[in-house]
Amino acid sequence: MDVRRESATSPPHRAELGSRALFRDLEVPVYLNHASVSPPSLAVRDAVTRTMDGYARRGMAWYSEEMDRRERVRGQLARLIGAQAPDLALVPNTSAGVMTVALCLPWQRGDKIVLFEGEFPTNITPWQQATRRHGLEIVWMQADSFRHDRAAALEQLEDQLRAGARLVAVSAVQFTTGQRMPLAEIGAMCRHHGSELFVDAIQAAGVVPLDVDSMCIDYLTAGSHKWLMAPEGLAGFYAAPQAAERLQPNVAAWLSHEEPFAFLTDGPGQLRYDRPIVPSARMAEAGTFNVLGTAGLEASLGLIEQLGVENIFNHVQAWHDAVEPGLVERGLESARMRDPGGRSGILSVRPADPHTTPAWAAALAERGVSCGSPDGWLRLSPHWPNALTEAEALFKAFDGAASALGV
Ligand SMILES: Cc1ncc(COP(=O)(O)O)c(C=O)c1O
Image (cartoon, helix red, strand yellow):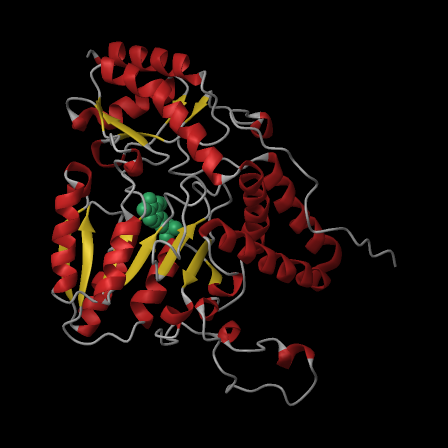
């Protein structure tokens, strides 16, 4: 029988800042919604198709290709955040990363968790559930206070850490305003006061440089379908080695054990239930994997690595620079921080009456601009394929939308 052995890696695709050559089927003329869901590049589509084709031809014999790929992807994600591959796990979504820590930390009644009003609910609900089960206390701060007076907000946070908060859970970038949180400062404070730092990085990874070591991040999770530009249903989960040691294996299942496949491959007598649980983030890799998503993620991370996150960030900032003044001139309020350290891939603006934001988003969509509208903000989120020349088309769409809405 002819069993074709074909490489699981896709042929090389070249990414170029400001070029949509790898997105030739994208029908939206100005796509500014990477903070919601990224369209897949040709590289991602090829990779996903190759995986399907591999299984179609070889069935179970293809499985090892995907196991090898997972190892490569953990390495790619680790490089993206300045971590080591053994400290990275692939989990189903950002929420799974949050839940892993919320369910597995050995909480003591009365432990305090610092959370931020304005966060996406992914980084709230699991902590609320842990609070309900273990009698914890949530200390609320306003995420926006870090945008208005960063120094004062950091002082308030330090007061909470001094008072003994056990953990701070924060997004690297706020999903509404695009505010990049001062992770390095927060991390240093947490380390100093013996608290832990948990980061939801889904709105940062792939567009904003991240470094878990220098930012003193204990846990980080980031889903694949936004700035990582891969299909939905996959996320990276990082736990620093010393932090992973604290986690109890409350989410463990068959793949969480050492040598989980031995009973399937190594003959009789290997079916045991007492193999140790892997003492790292990998404990969260509990069951069968999302192979299609992982194939897509390998390809999209390959493009991001070609370009470099720093270069992508600078390109996106140049795009923001090109459009922000024109939008402010048109009467929109910009949430972009003057301090470059507070900027991200998201440029959010809002009309005088934020209740009209959904109508603005719909009117812009009719004029070929796709953007988000979370909580009263018009969220523009360009990524590396967006050309700086899109500003003209964007202004035209805004002017058309303004006339249609009668403002
Ligand atoms: C900050 C933030 N966290 C998490 C999510 C999503 O979490 P999950 O990957 O679990 O769906 C989003 C958006 O969908 C988000 O903006």
